[in-house]
Length: 319
Length: 152
Image (cartoon, rainbow over all chains, first blue to last red; front, side):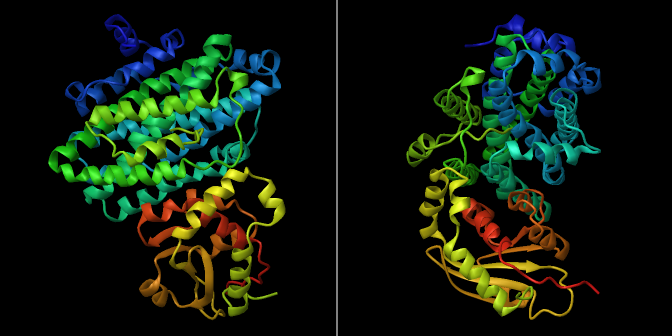
């Protein structure tokens, strides 16, 4: 489905309350533009200035009542299994972004400062959700993160541990373009472009279809619009590196090989059915999102990746 | 109880790694998780070094090393960091405080994700090809009784 021009206008110009009335599927489609139409970094920065929202304007009181009175225990558990991946994922992508700033094009540096601020705001969004809706108490951000940790699988540490270690590689060698490409593949293509944009759809479709959790829907749809800027900026950067030297495609392939190998593991089962989904549908979303991101940067995968893709177990995480 | 970074402790760690997981841990996760580890095990070769950056005085060395052949630890020893730098395929290092945190039961996934153990030698993508083999190895070491050193 292609999102229409009038819907794009509504997505681009909507304020925070407007995000609550925007269909999440339109926002997800809005991410994908052909390479030739990828916005410039300063255009993305301008969008950030217009689209920035205040996480403290959200009122979670109706969400709290929905959580306790209208959602079943099964749907709450499934919701937490998915939302906790974002709770931790947002923190990870916030904490691991700064070293990229040193070695990227000057215009991207300007935009990346806004990307970093977005991720901090998304971390606070989930912190507020867990405090105000789920009812977890704690002094600081890490107290709440520690409390939601038991809901996520240990395989979460695969992509997000890799991101931590690649961040350290980048900290030590910020101008090494092979490391930049490995990092961008992990962060912008896989974590933001595939995991986040796939799994966002599950809880947001649930909130939309069952008419619950309005502040969560509003804030997380606004988050998705933010992610659209990050992914588009990241895809522009990946494309720039490939234009400089097409041989960097090997770094994309090597990184995806590691990510897909890890994605073949899971340690527990998440039940999607209480939220109206199935594992097969989530796997199909992953494959679709990966193929769209690779199309945006003009990269294809060797045949050996087909089997790896078929083995993927959905990692319920994003950032 | 063996002391931290002693030969006796290294040998106990190797024994734990080679029989891991115990039945209770095995049953706490899906069988397919262990099958994933079994599938990558034959690819694990070479030397893994686990080092402490700021070890208090009193140990025989600051680095635990394992030599692996197809995922089986064939030897374990305590060496100085400089030796490990020259010989290890992968070297993970952390502060003594963070090692103590791990022995106190801190989640091994967080040890990686929150940078308490960092990969200071070795290719990052290759290391993560066996990611859960390594985190389970840390979990095995975590269970070995050890007498920690007291910082001066």
